Image (cartoon, rainbow, N blue to C red; front, side, top):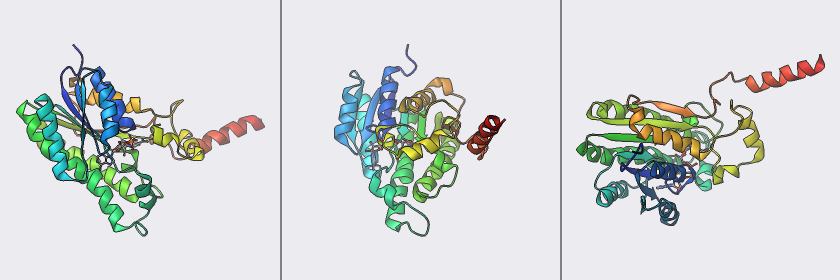
Length: 269
Ligand SMILES: NC(=O)c1ccc[n+]([C@@H]2O[C@H](COP(=O)([O-])OP(=O)(O)OC[C@H]3O[C@@H](n4cnc5c(N)ncnc54)[C@H](O)[C@@H]3O)[C@@H](O)[C@H]2O)c1
């Protein structure tokens, strides 16, 4: 018997790098997966690759009616809902470009990011929890980010939205945990999706210098953690945010410089 055998899962942003890897992983583990995304064509292509265990639905995480319809689609398709992976985010270059500092960000950009990244996650919980309770509970997994823990020189709306997701996770767990609904978050560090592989090489190198593993993260790393959090094996974990970042936020800020200093000192001797 597989770990997620016949559990019904919705994965939002399921057409993207992390979402598609999670859809594949959960289907491999026996789940029936609804690949939900604003981009139906790509969602359909991900669902088609799940050996008959997937279906695709178009939805907009910025529109609460559409989120309600997404949950209804899953129930109509498979009769229940056990797993919700809130994972969609506004990651388009136009939004990233305008999401700057408190002084410079347009209010419209702030509102758009909060609408999709925070209200979208809350609304999916709003419609999913009552359905999960009908079959005794379920597991909600929210994709946050390392940006929710630390400040950065840009992307104030994105970082703040990810901090809000960490708080939302604790509230949903607190309010519905005793009823059998677990809610946890994953905070990835840089994950090499098709999009992030195109990041400027200098930035990738800076990030690599602060990862305590020999490699950067892959979508499959996050998918494996999401499948664990969806399964009963994580049954005593609730309200938690797990950082999956190769240790990039777990060391002294001067680690890289100290490493270089020590190498140079060794060379000099
Ligand atoms: N890749 C990373 O390095 C990284 C790091 C930390 C956190 N994350 C988080 O992981 C999650 C997935 O990111 P990814 O790297 O796979 O990005 P991605 O851009 O590949 O995927 C995001 C998906 O969300 C969909 N989407 C965007 N707006 C939507 C909307 N309004 N309604 C429905 N779907 C919408 C997109 O079409 C896309 O398929 C995001 O929440 C992101 O913030 C990613």
